[in-house]
Length: 313
Length: 115
Image (cartoon, rainbow over all chains, first blue to last red; front, side, top):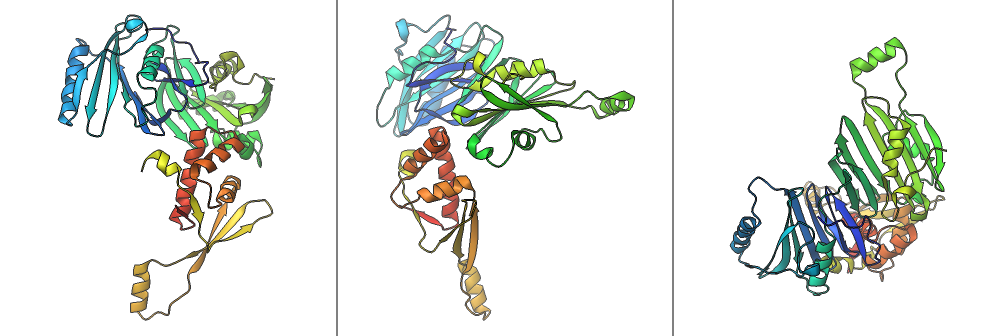
């Protein structure tokens, strides 16, 4: 599918990336529901947009899928019809097959698009709900669809929601997430490793009465670790890694207990009043290089890869 | 009620609460806790004398104290959240969620009402 830019450099729009798909939405739209392959965006008027996606089975047909959707909508008393969506240049970007539709019921309606990418065989259903204010409408839908991509060519997967952004190797699969006021957490598993990305706010309040070491130990699963200070890119941070087991007894104990070695790095993004953290768990001791690579891939939404993380001082 | 309407509500403090500011700048709210009506009925039926409401205490942390101070009976939840977001450089939505949860918790304890 069409290659969208990594970050949307437009004041009124922002980038969203989740579980393989990536697109731009108006800045005032906020995620209302977040699922493994489902996002619902809301604005002040109520629901604004919904997207669901997943792998297409063998013999997938967009038209058959749309007929099924039409039947489901009709059961709810709404009127469904296919329609052309105003996409940039008159056709869907790249090799994508797309069908447009709209439905209207007593309590509302939506315009939408069913997109199927034959390259990665992902089918995506986008719906833009009709809102009371009637603002944007087709123009916003066009821009969202135009920016949409469902796979990348660099073997990585982007994650960007609210104010954080990460571009991780595809083998890290999301197994859990939390977006609470003050704490965001994304948990991944892959290749016998567990990766957790944290974002806390406001940093000024959280670090008022405790050191970064104490905070990392208590909040980033770094209990019992010895942390060392890091500086880089004008930031302060701490890093701790579980050491290699020493001696025969240590190694034997390690084998019997099947240990998980931790590597934790926590740093403060002062200008945004945020604290970011990365925790990696692996069967072997975590190396600084591996931790650094993951920290470089994780940052705030307005940072590029070179600006993220904190380098060992 | 839509999200916009909910954010437009104005939280108003209960007149019966008393504020105590600690040296740390944090607040302790003292508020009357009335017994549930069915407990009052049962104790009256059992012949117990009417007891005055006990005083509950709620210790607010720094963030809670800041928001509590913004409840002036004129500012809406949206205005309070925006000010809170500005002060702590938070995302608007995150601040709205934090302030809404806080006001809901205060409301559950009878410390504020909404108008």
